Length: 450
Image (tube, rainbow, N blue to C red; front, side, top):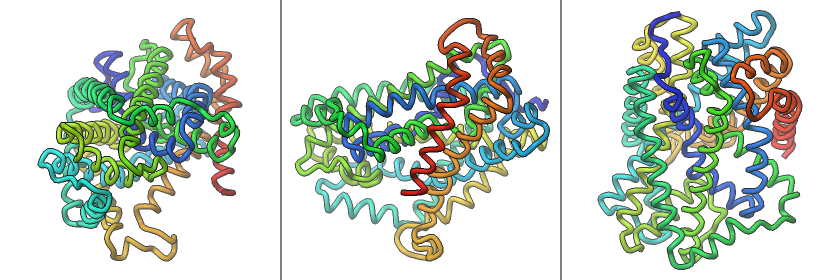
């Protein structure tokens, strides 16, 4: 095993890093957006059920695979199943980490630019001005290439420092900062005039909507994406654990912290949003974050500080996720090709940046802004292929792999190394073999038919 592989310095460091991998823009804007489009509190209720019974078993399984094999996704799958077509699962995870980073970094670049606008009082104060500001910013190709490259470069610098001095050290700093910012913003939001209406929308479920197939599908999908399943990050992070390190309680902590952060984001968005006249809770992600909320920041007492803190929060959440996305292909190059870490980081970082440029140029006109073959932009194509399809397919396959190819009994033996605890190996085995893959399969079918 190459010396450049590394290991975690402590169990809390692993928990913070893995939580940082899961926590990202999907929690801060994706979750509130889906709640708004899903009718409010009924969506939240279904989301929590999906996290516990569908997604948490897969998360624990991915960490178990990594700890057992001491390799990234491709190597781990090959070690457990040397023959057969299962190796595709590992390569799909590596590809997902690489290509998701290529368009995720574009959005991360926007958050940094909006942070600067918030600090310099450059946010628009009305709906039309906010929309025009976002359109102009996203259409500025050269500027966005610069900020996307800077974000990928900063991510590469952190990953190049290694597991302990880079990823773990950054997570120990960033995750507490992110949580503190969330709590401060949530307290400020729920004390705004009109916040009560937003809290009612968020916390009082209309149980008649809980049986809506569209809401159920959206809630399961958001729970899956919120925990970053199917992209190999948790297998990779698990592989840096020593075989003696317990993963059951650590995995439950990751699920709990990630879910708490998503819920806190809702306590920011909806009370704040409903304090704006004419707020539409069903607004899409970019429209909600980069067009609607700046109106609030520009009119609030102390809104300059409030807006700056919010976009700092978004930037931190994006950074903790891009680190894990880059580490997946870097670990693959170290494990499978025996590259030194520096070479792997430079090669993967350069490839990812080059592939991000078409996503940057998807806004404001031009070849990549309208592809006749796919009926949309290159950016939307990447989101649909990797977020909407590759991740759920990968998650379903990894749950089938763990439950049936590795075998719930053998995987359960690995889980028993941690001693007694929740979930029991028998309960976890049932969920990973039957409940999780069936639910994801139904989600995929529903999306295909829909």
